[in-house]
Amino acid sequence: MAMRDLVVEFSHFLAKIKPYLLMVSLQFGYAGMYIITMICLKRGMSHWILVVYRHAVAFVAVAPFALLLERKTRPKMTTRVFLKIIALGILEPVIDQNLYYVGLKSTTATYASAFVNVLPAVTFILAVIFRLEKVNLKKVSSMAKLIGTAITVGGAMVMTLYKGPAIHLVPHSASGGHHAEAAGIVGVQNWVTGTICLLCCIVGWAGFFIVQSMTLNEYPAELSLAAWVCLMGVVEGGIVALVMERDMSAWAIGLDSRLLAAAYSGVVCSGIAYYVQSVVNKMRGPVFVTAFSPLSMVITAFLAALILAENAHLGSLIGAFIIVIGLYFVVWGKSKDNESMEKGKLQELPIVMEKERGESLNIINAKLPAENIPREA
Image (cartoon, rainbow, N blue to C red; front, side, top):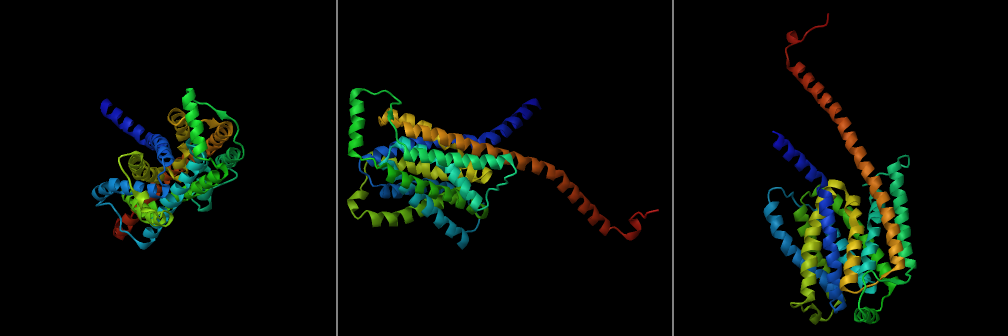
């Protein structure tokens, strides 16, 4: 009996930490994608084409599981849901990813991954606008979320307006430093253009999570929704790529970094990521999904310094530190809201049960003959 109780408690513990494990694991996947993609783009691959290949790989990887595992639970597709899926394809694969790649090429992998920390604040603002999050200025949790959002925006402004001196996170040899300097000369870093593209990318990404949350209410099939988004990414991204890239030779791909970037980002950061985000979004909401981006920034900064010989800049580090502080104000406020909701459900449960019990007794009494009902003295 004790062993059975232990197993039950352990299963409950795993269920409780499941959203955290999923999102932390996903940040490691994103960090690897930032590095691999940066190498691929530096070698001349078009990001418009990369987006198409990425989602083609993701669709091939996810669709069989969606067809097999959700064949009995998949709800019927409606015009309303399909229009939302089209919007998801435009927001994430087309707008978000293409603008992110432009920003990535114009700045650095470390800077771009640090800028993603603005995502939770933007998602919170959109969630309030679309009434997925409630704000009550009389509650400490709501004030914390508002203050955290303001601090996060301030950190983003610091990163945008102040670059500062370079900081060597990992010491390199003289040849490594020369290589990094040469790479910076070849790819002229237009920080203003890159920052604007990254800001627009974040807005599109946040909008994706909002629409995803709405879509899951009508179409609660995470794998199938992920497959549909990947398919829309291929179709819509392909149309945009054909318009932007007129040279058909740019579509050529071989056993090189292009194939690795498409395969890795497709399977890990599109197929698996869309599914994991759908599961956690359904469990905890869009704000929680976006709350783990600082971990990706830390991992990416270390890998970029180690592999790409990139140097972080003081403005990026200061801005990222400010963003992390603001972010955890938002996360703390969100956690307090979740605790309040859970307490409210626990208090409401006995009342609902008593009400149902009373309704059941009334039904039984109504069915009994009049002579069987005890009369008052």
